[in-house]
Amino acid sequence: MKYNFDFASLQEYWPEFLRGALMTLEMTVIACVFGLVIGVLCAIGRRGKRKWLATLCGAYVEIVRNTPYLIQIFFIFFGLASAGLKLPIFAAAVLTMVFNVGAYTAEIVRAGMDTIHPGQIEAAEALGLSTPQIYWDVILRPSLERVYPSLSGQFVLMMLSSSVTSQISAEELTGVANSVQSESFRSFETFIVVAVLYFGMAMMLKFAFHLFGQAIFPRRRRLGTPL
Amino acid sequence: MSAVVKLHDIHKSFGSVEVLKGVSFEIAKGEVVAIIGRSGSGKSTALRCINRLETIQSGTLEVCGHRIDNEAVDLRALRQDVGMVFQSYNLFPHLTVEENITLAPRRVKKLANRDARALALESLQRVGLAEKIDAYPEQLSGGQQQRVAIARSLAMQPKVMLFDEVTSALDPQLTGEVLRVMETLARGGMTMVVVTHEMAFARRVANRVIFMHQGKVWETGPGDMLADPKTPELRDFISNGL
Image (cartoon, rainbow over all chains, first blue to last red; front, side, top):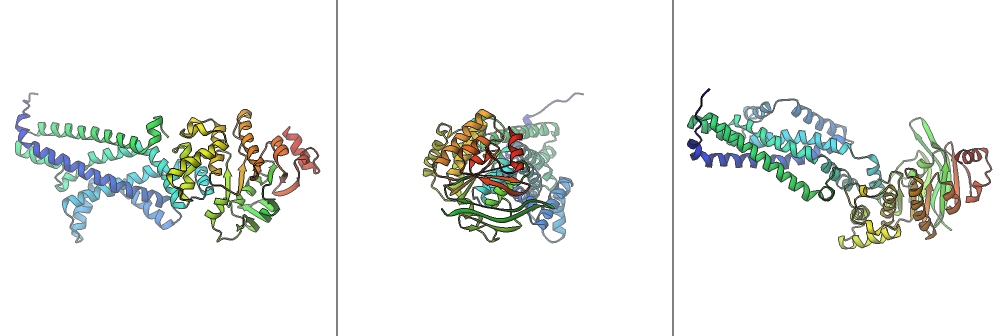
């Protein structure tokens, strides 16, 4: 096999790559923030006393975790459009990401909540804390600290999976790569560049999550041990 | 002296098993009462009914003016008046000692953050652990954790304190340090209900001892009654414990 690499011809596309990478990051940040909110609410809903809510949250988690991500994207973009709700590409892509990562986050957060010993909750009740205060201070905070490594891993995975949204022509990094390689005819080089960019962004995200974790979990920062 | 805790004919079942079969007793302000008995005698359940961690099926239960048998009782107000210390400490592992102590005063009593540290320090001084204010629970021994748990309860300035086998998870040396703190509290006039297996403590510190057996108050009297039990069940319990 003989192949002459020519990265020079990709130089003119750098602004495109950069724009795609930024859009990938933008989509990921939005998905992480809203996905975390949905995940936490859903995890609380599944533990709650209202059976219909627990069933609803459970059904959402199971549906998302047991269907392909690509089908979820097609469902939201093409399916809803057929039913009369035509979403812009960016909105459909981000909505699918939120919908998807929310379910995985719910399971991770629920696993964290399950590690809270009932005695902790009893102690908080005995101190007179209200149910929302107990949820926030005694259940959620230590749960999130405990599952933070899995959670941040899931978010990095979400960033990588966002490449699938190129299938509905979202102009994130993979979408840009598709256009670039069809214009430049340098597929191999294009995907090498894109792979390196994804790798760099994943490393950057991991580091950002590490710094964020150190900032919001003082116990972790001081002791350096898992909770 | 007026009673701050009044239990009258309390019945409590878990499923088909009746664990409290008509329990009645009263505790006066400033009194220290030790509840002793075998495992399964209902002593911990009786204690947990006092701050409504367990609900009762029938009977009347009044604590610091709160009618606990009433469904509409203000639980948060009740629990500000009644502190509780558990066998397994139950400190919050993600919070420092200071945060453990000040969480409830800040959240429930809306104490300002600047006053919180002073309160934590004052409570810790009472249990002899002021130097551990910035430590995390995992950095403390079992005895120290239990003393912090006592300080955490004290910070809410309760009128009554409940102790549920607080030394059962500790070795004899650590048990001693916790019991000394409790003895100091008792001498300071705190109303205390102590479920315990520490007979020497019950005898020395308690104004009154309640022996529970098969879900009932079987025998009650001053600490000296342990030296001269009237019922064969208490005699049996004491001789097996020695």
